[in-house]
Amino acid sequence: MVKTEAGKMMNARIKGIFKIDGITSTNPVAVGDEVEIEMENEIEQTGLITEIHQRKNYIARATPHQNRERHIVASNLDQLLLFATLKEPKTSQGFTDRFLVAAEAYHVSPVIVFNKSDLYRKKEMQVFEDRKKMYNAVGYSVLLTSIEKGEGLDELKDVLKDKVTLLSGHSGVGKSTFINAVFPELRLRTKEVSGWSGKGMHTTTFAEMFDLPFGGKIIDTPGIREFGITDINKQELSHYFPEMRELLNECQFNNCIHINEPGCAVKFAAEHGKIAMERYISYYNILESINEKSY
Ligand SMILES: Nc1nc2c(ncn2[C@@H]2O[C@H](COP(=O)(O)OP(=O)(O)OP(=O)(O)O)[C@@H](O)[C@H]2O)c(=O)[nH]1
Ligand SMILES: [Mg+2]
Ligand SMILES: [Zn+2]
Image (tube, rainbow, N blue to C red; front, side, top):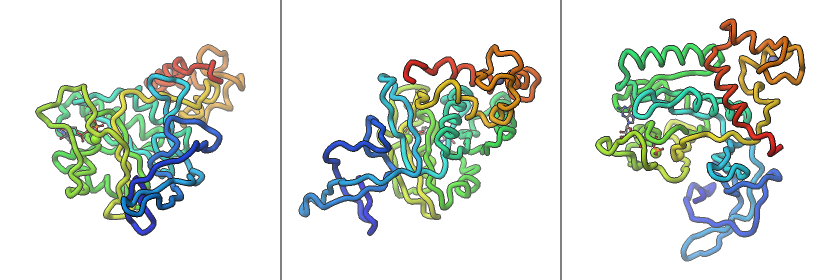
């Protein structure tokens, strides 16, 4: 579906093979792309995509089954809004950190939103406070919302104003519910509360971009279970942890991957509480998951 400069929505198809930036992906055209179209069928008002403009940036992830394939999640973004929840469902810190690494690697600034605060008891509030403190120290904004109760919504709208935002996170965290709260008239499909099982089917099945009434655009996406890192090698991973990035010059070896090397400033910082141990563990887990063979 494309939107013309005149604001008209129309169905369009792609003809031929497109290779953008010399990369192959499972989806040649992604939400957020700017394209040239020709009218293909006047009666049915359908178009033909003839050209995809150079992307300012994009976010890509490994497709779950085929590690070599990559999927462009969206393109031409200003920021990434990661929806997380600490209950129904639980978003792990490891998942959050993978997303943050992708945001850093593709130069899209991230904001973390903890939603469903109405379900948090003392224990979850403590986890929220700890994560907020940890991520703020790294330089990331962290918001707390209850879309259900309308709490934190105004603050969130301020973050979105006049920007192109990709909304992502696990299935069931409330992404579409949030968009419905901004545009009641859209009536996007969201999961029934009674049907909530903690797992199961995705409610949103394709990515879609909406113009925000107060300026800016937002892209709703289907929930994902895991964010498969792609395009990043072991050597550069620590560049995408801002708190590690600033220490890299202090490691004894310039090819240090911060695990067992002597004179490692990053490991020293983690052991002495200057870098959160939880972040260092995420770093380690991501490092282990990177398949060097593909480089
Ligand atoms: N208690 C509570 N429930 C919420 C809140 N926000 C959303 N929900 C509920 O969470 C469920 C899932 O919401 P969706 O908006 O469908 O989740 P989604 O992130 O779009 O999920 P996918 O489309 O599958 O990726 C729905 O039953 C919502 O009503 C909240 O702040 N508090
Ligand atoms: Mg949804
Ligand atoms: Zn090191």
